[in-house]
Image (cartoon, rainbow over all chains, first blue to last red):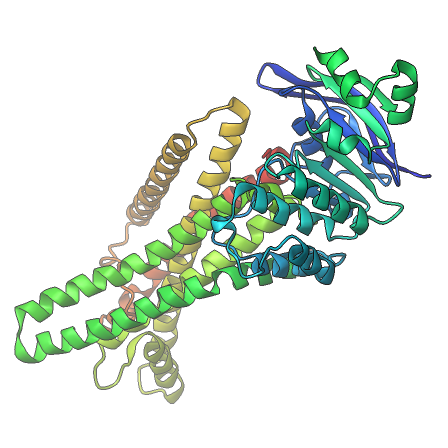
Length: 231
Length: 289
């Protein structure tokens, strides 16, 4: 296993409020990592730093040995915590956009995933429900052959049955040496697929352990461990 | 990758651009028609309609600037920015493509407008903007006009064309700079009233532009007085029809016109470059979405 992501001494402030404080962790290739914590603990801020949406003035982030920038953006496939595309776009427009912008985008795979979920490519994003919009976004992001997938709250508006299908599609599309970072509150549904878990509280890293190790130590499920830490 | 970004921008804006340019072309045709009727039949209604159509055509250029700058804002500084700013390009590439496309479309619209006003003022020999250039060359090379007048007239027309082009580019970059600067202020200060900040920054920057215009004209006047020369009035840059300049004596005016154009190009060009560089710096180093 090679080191894919290295975060060292990350700090971030919004005005006077500290959002991240001395966060350091590493992610090996081929791993699926869950980032957990209550609202406002810094999950989205950490993710935005990794994908380059927030400036990194303190600390360092290396993705496949490269500092965050043009090169790393080509390796990272990111889905934000809300449907980001404008409502006047059709699904086919987004397919064209991803196909043009990313050399590693697999249009056939995306179209077959849309068909599996009953999403028509001539549908407008604005006429879809929040959950369907999120499904479209996740499928587009996961249809790239990226080295690192970063999904921020990917299942917030998706119903439990569709969630299972989306997770299956996600895993099917990932190559063996790719890693996935997932920030979610749906711990029970994602526990089975996770290799490692990162717990954040008030911008600080509480721990970063393998899910197996966590279960052995506390004889709890990940969900129970979460409740124990944050209750 | 920048080419791909440009291709995507053109793909997304082509319909809009075609619609606006078609709107301007139709208005141009209507303006010429009503102007013709007004002149031949001395109709006041036709004359009023001509003015309304002309104003609507000019507004078309303003609408293009607002629409293109609005796209810059909505693609990068709203939720869609979360996707756009993670594309594998430097953030400045988004600025570059929008500015290049925005200014190009504005030039296209301005040429359409010039052609319209030029055609309206046609006479037996000249035919609008393009015709005037053609005539200048023809006169110059055939030697019909007395020596050098052709070149001087050409230099005058060329200088004013470039200064108008610089002003158009400057105004579009001011739009983009106002949006970028506002975004920086909003994210740094944690201000929620985004529209308010954009409005204030926009108003301040455009007032600064008026100040620059005042400075240019004042400077020209001071230099004229310092040199103790009494050159007749300057041709207005608002005069899009270059035939107007050929109707007066270019031999007497050309030096002042060129000097005035150079001042415009310098002041508006330099401020445009500075605003562009500031915007680029914010996009690359300070932008947080």
